[in-house]
Image (cartoon, rainbow, N blue to C red; front, side):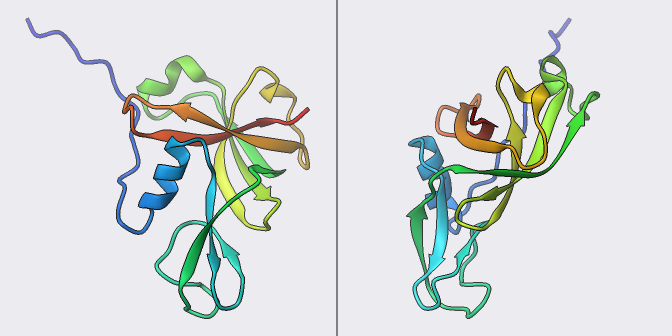
Length: 139
């Protein structure tokens, strides 16, 4: 009889547009795009500036921000997450002004309130080349 495979968490499908972002994450850096023309910072990675369609540079984020919204999941859709419940999903307004969706991790996550300060941390996945940017409360 074949042994049942444990469910695995899904991983991002990395493409040439967001590859620098994921390489930065693997190195412990949260990277954002900044327009070379108008200076707008944007997230998520795109091929051109969303305001003026100009060329973009990559900049390193401070990795800090505040909780804009959050929700918690007690019953995950993917069984690979069952050991992590409750899972806190958050929208963070980074200090650079963009909103990023992520997960809140850490021992104090149950104490989260709107407006709380957070900082980025990187979680290793089952792929040694991919780390996911998550956030924890910044004390």
